Image (cartoon, rainbow, N blue to C red):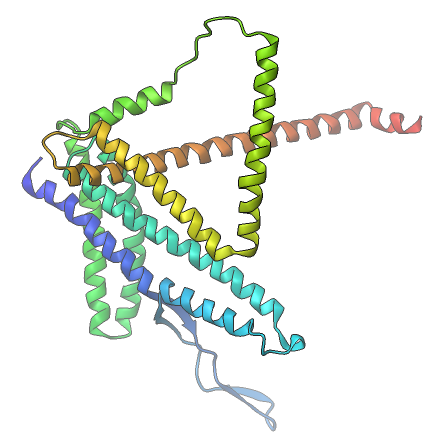
Length: 343
């Protein structure tokens, strides 16, 4: 791979990271002004003075919207307000909007992490860099195209900053297209961290336990009682406290879950670095690649889980539809169901 062909896929995640930060801080909304008209009583006709105009307004991004909505909900839930004047429907609507904005915020954070993972994996030529960069660049193509069209609309209304945005997003779009082409040319280059690839394959294959001796009924009964006892202990000391925590202490529960996810991620990152680390790289570099590999595993397992869930839903829906179709045929041709109701 030539030098410029290697440099462009390295620069593109940086541009996309700036794009994600831009979307987190700045947003756009299409505003339509209402026409101004006056009705003449004598002539009984409407005289319009202006036609509706469409323009794009620049507003604050997701980060500021979350803060503003949280502040509004806190103000509406103050105890100083009379009970009769508390707008419950408005509070519920704001809470639903806030949940959507938080989901969008975490999606942007995940995309920023994907930019980092794609950058690191391509820089060190990890074996999983190709699927990570493919997903990043294809998402970037659609996103930068949409942002370019929006800024072109803003630029037609005037403003040098709008044209600067057009140049930036158009450049990002071109870089995404070129990067998606250039990464395909580096398939035959030597890859690193292939130990993680082999360990992942062994993990997916699994190992079937080999029984050394036949288990007695007494052992089976003891194992069954132990499982019940462990289940009761886990339910009383873990599940029920967690349920009460997420019900009455939502913020604390969220912090607790995020802390557990952080500890679990750190455990996996440490093991990935120990198992698949390259000797010619420093411990920091191995850790960075391990972080990107963790996100790759998360994406792959997530897509497989979603695909499996779709197949299960499709299969159950197909069986249910087939059953209804069969009942309809029996009802139409034989009338068995009607005869059965007569008895």
